[in-house]
Amino acid sequence: MNPGPNGRQRSLKSPTQIAALFSKGKRHFQYPLILIRTDEIAAPGKVVFSVSKKKFKRAVDRNRVKRQLRAVYFSLQPHPPQYHLALVYVGNELMPSQNLAMSLKKLLAELPSENGEGPKSTPKGNTH
Image (cartoon, rainbow, N blue to C red; front, side, top):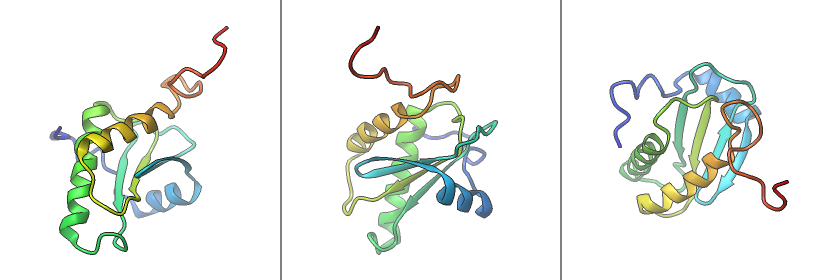
């Protein structure tokens, strides 16, 4: 659950890279999360977690959601991603970690595979 000693190294901290990610990134939505990823491959991809101050006025609530997101993300994605990612929580209420994990699994399945060929999940319909 804990990102470990290299968790800080896997967090995106640069304001210019974060601004570029939010302005030019591709978006994937699965309630209550939006996943934003860069187009170009980053050697070791990094992640940023965001929770709206408008929806959660109290800092303890925002911190709780970010802590939950980090725990779920690092348990599902043990290795650094191929792209820079942003996970934005857009829900209005606090949710259990199991619900976040289900949403995040669906979002991670939409990401291109390691070899750069389409999404990780198989397409629906014909498999010929």
